Length: 268
Image 1 (cartoon, rainbow, N blue to C red):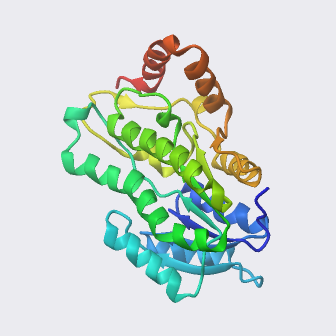
Image 2: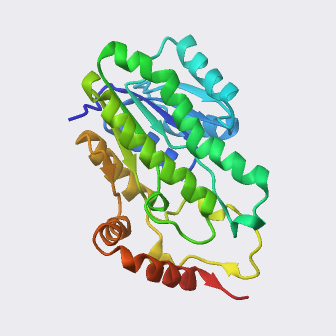
């Protein structure tokens, strides 16, 4: 079991939907948090909202994770605070949608930098300290899109599939050092990522309410899975269903994809 009481938890993408809930719920569980995001104003608001006399927010660090320089700057800032995360949560992410040839190259390249390379870079930076201590936990927020390739999000799927594979391999590599790795696969959730850039669509995109989960419930499931050292965490009902279909009825995936597309695309 991973003990959260007094644990130092570094959360990237802290001002987003999942990030805010992670801040709240990890603090409630007794953890101390290092918050980082590109949005400096959002970090200030988050600190004002959640900081208490318990001083559980150890640092708020503005960082741009779209390149190695930003990842290195974040690591250096954490070291300057004389902090070493017990748990690294790679939560920051972006999305773009549209048929692959309609999405500008710089947009999907930026997505790959933030959604896949940033988690790998941060693991590269923080992992040596965890190995030296003989403890640690890395949590990578992937997606159901890391299990099934859906139309309109080819680059996003590539990043999330990659993050799943990276997590599985890393878990095998660091097991001997008592370091745990968890990959998380949420379905659609009520976070700003639902309003991400879209390219080439003539239709209006709308995701039905019954397909969207509450971030608070997702994060509660994540914390439960982290405590239990789960490698794969499916934090909602739809994620578990899709994983089951992928494993045992893979022939249904194209049918499922078509039905999902029909439900989320509405003509004006």
